[in-house]
Image 1 (spheres, one colour):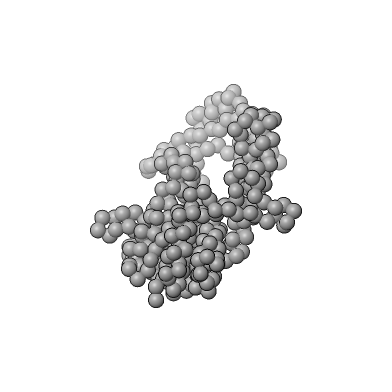
Image 2: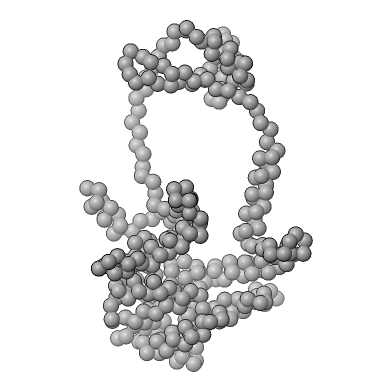
Length: 336
């Protein structure tokens, strides 16, 4: 039985072809093949917000090649990324290769999903093919329609009222509002001066240690209780800090108690999309766009000498910390 696997990128196709070998034909759609039209809104608001998809210019040749390959195969396995965008790509491919011209029946088109491009994950997905998840497709449609309605209607307003070339967006505009609100809070903030007093102590045995003044006992029980309750003990000005420091000069200090505690720190969880971007920005000064571009390459496959193209990380667009059991076993073997 001949089988066709369709993914969205040539790099991913190369890695999967290396895993599956000659028994499978692997083709790439090179991203989305259909989208809302570029020069009109493309959403029928009066007809339940029906999207009016068109073939993306330049993708006609890709669609012809996919139709031809599908006609020559007994089974078609759609393997774009395991998220809403990937599901929408799979759905659009299915709609194009299963029409009357292609003579390909929907019954032989399946969806396969895997979170890492390893031989075990890919072959496991092939053993359990499924149908396209229309809930994910509809979620992607809703996002795309909202993007279009907000951007298409608000951007021209910005051009007229503010400056040409500005853009509005479903997420972008809300984020700008949050930034503006935060900036106004910062500008309205009234600064208050405060001081803290730290001292370095040396006992009979090294090392020395630092301590911070957190309470002044003035014989006022009520005031002491209030100070004890308020853990943020603050000295209002430099003059007061100098006076307190002078008063403490030459005093004897007693270390009343020593508390020993064992602390157990769990390892940091695996990266999700947001923490990956934050860490890459902090350590490598990468933009979010560059981080996701590099992560996409690592996921789809990197050439590693004699090993060829190898996928090195799991799918990077996720908010889940779950680790595959196989990966957990590998980690345990390395640690022990």
